[in-house]
Amino acid sequence: MNYKNMQWLLDKRPTGMPENECWKLNEDEISEIGKNEILIEVKYLSIDPYMRGRMNDSKSYAAPAKLGEPMTGETVGVVVESNSNLFEVGDKVCAHKGWQTYIRAKDTDPALMKVPKGDIKLSAYLGTLGMPGRTAYFGLNRVGKPKSGETIVVSAASGAVGTVVGQLGKEYGCRVIGIAGGPEKCSFVKDELKFDHCIDYKAENLDEELKKACPNGIDIYFENVGGAVTRAIAPLLNDGARVPVCGFISQYNAEDMMKVETPFHVLGALDPKPEHRFFVVTEWMDEWQAATKELSQLVKDNKIIYRETITKDFVNAPQALRDVLTGKNFGKQLIEV
Image (cartoon, rainbow, N blue to C red; front, side, top):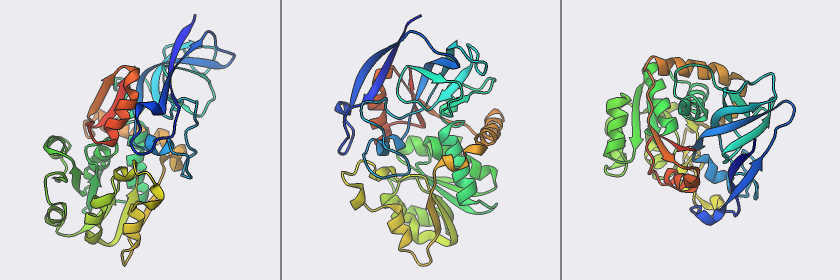
């Protein structure tokens, strides 16, 4: 059986916001699979902020995406062909194999992870139970090291990572303050996710509102944004504060990343310096399954809830990435293929 595989290939390095000309839509045909191979029909494509950095040809924590190859990204789908003893037709699988509608892969490929059987939505394995959820889990627990009674501030609090960080913080007995953009997102964070407070950085005086919300200072700041948010946070950090640096999306479209102010400039100038470092979820890859199991139970128990923005049609992936980079999405951004 022949399968038509649509791919978004990276065609050009962006300067600033990535426009459509940075990608090329390609059609490939998959006619058969080899021994110990499987074919996955993609159902959902994940759209994440880190993708913007991978489009640059610059030194980073991971190699840049290659020109002429499918754009970096994670998908989840269903096995439709199998020549493997490890996977059966019908198995659901997450695959870090880029922006494409079908994935042909060796059954031992480390980029594959079988989705556990159960009644949790498939799309959740790209969000709360996928890379963003695990990023929140390990960043908070291994870098933030929360203790009951401490104050946690989370930027991008309504996003795929921030929502999980805050709800985990509440589960651990912490006071949690979110920062988000717009009244709808702040209402969701406070009323539905049950953060103690949420500050609308677009409408309120961030410095003053943070002081009011954190009268005893900040023990953990989970950094997703950078820029003015980090500058407002810095003077409120307590002695012994910890700052897991997940990202700084406010700067991702800068034309020269070497010239922008990063959280490391702001935090490094403090005396005393808070404990802070950039982290990548792959540092704890051998613990992913255990973390996913724990997060899954919290979802089943309604102790972690999540919001998704699902955009239909694979061709809309580039615009969805721009929406993430400008904060237009709400919660986890996905493409329904």
